[in-house]
Amino acid sequence: MATTTHDTETEVQDRAILVSLVTDKIKRTGIDPELSLQELVQLAETAGVEVLDVLRQNKETPDSRWFIGKGKVEELRMAADGLGANTAIFDQELSGAQVRNLEEALDLKIIDRTQLILDIFAGRAKTREGIIQVELAQLSYLLPRLSGQGKNLSRQGGGIGTRGPGESKLETDRRHIRERITELKRQLDEVVKTRELHREHRRKSGAVQVALVGYTNAGKSTLLKQLTDADVYIENQLFATLDPTSRVLQLPGSKEVVLTDTVGFIQNLPHDLVASFRATLEEVNEANLVLHVVDSSSPMREEQMEVVQTILQDLGAAGKPQIVLFNKIDLCQPEQLEMLPTGEGFLKISAFNEDDLSRITEIISDQLAGDTLIFRIPGDRGDLSSLLYRVGEVLEQDYDGSDVLYNVRLNKEDYDKWSYKLAEFVEPQ
Image (cartoon, rainbow, N blue to C red; front, side, top):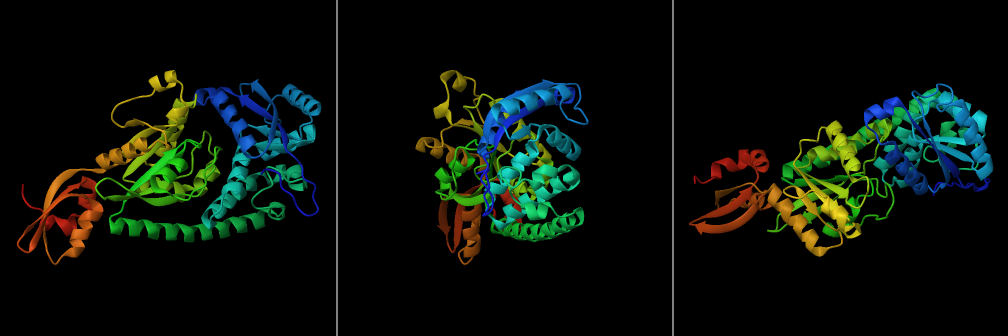
């Protein structure tokens, strides 16, 4: 819910006009302003905002005082008066001075895209790590804008832009906010150390890791739930799940992998948010395989795929082995299905189809499989036998005196990781 209530406050429904400014710079970056605006509508609705109207303007550069042109400010004021709007949400990031000037001219709550996304994340964070990350991102965003947050900080009606740290923190001075940021970073460092210990434990245990990535609302959490019976929150909305979830996935041949769901990506994901969530997003870097889940029914499918690839590039994970899962084919029109790429590395699926789920586990198994090696393990080395079952696919085993011969399919990465233990037991072929 975007509307916040307190004991002494009256509940106020956010009724908003959305504003998009398309500049020459935006055109050069290749960002699709219509896709971004459609997402802004979804983001606003996810935050519980009633969207009344959308205003667009094309301009060479943003106005330093108003962001949009002065004439468009007047048009926005008249539209707000006529429709009864109490909020204006901008699809781009505003400076503190622009927020202050717009508030004074319009007598509206002014929210930009970044603040809206941060507000949604604040409502989604459930774990200690997620709550710390969101508050850190919010305060990092707020600090340089303190001088422009006049009415947003004094309004008592709640709603978007007031979640997370809370008004008592927002009204403190820069020194207190800097101290809070320092403390949050310290707490986050502790959480990151704990996460790194878990990663190191998985590495030492030989656990193979598979990461689910994709645009928000592509169906990653649904897929995790269907594949592993994970108890995760499922909802048809943006950023329905925020905190990463890892579960064991059983593959054909009794091999197990760790499947991790990550936070959904979106165009123009706020820099402060990416920075705060880097430790979480870098789970992708630990993965042996990346499953890129795509909403195949989305008319903006290709643009969304490009956004995901760009963020993977930024994280240093673009070179990871990847399988593209075109999800939600049950929602596609025939012509949409025909346009989907086919061949190696692509799979058309519905997360609710049992046959498709089996195909996913098979393609993961095939992708992770490597060369077939024969290991001669002494009968008293049960530790090595269990290691082979854990990191490879044991195809056959036989006995030769007191030794056990294992025919194992093992990928190169796993063999390299464990060669210091296994190399001397490989039989020549």
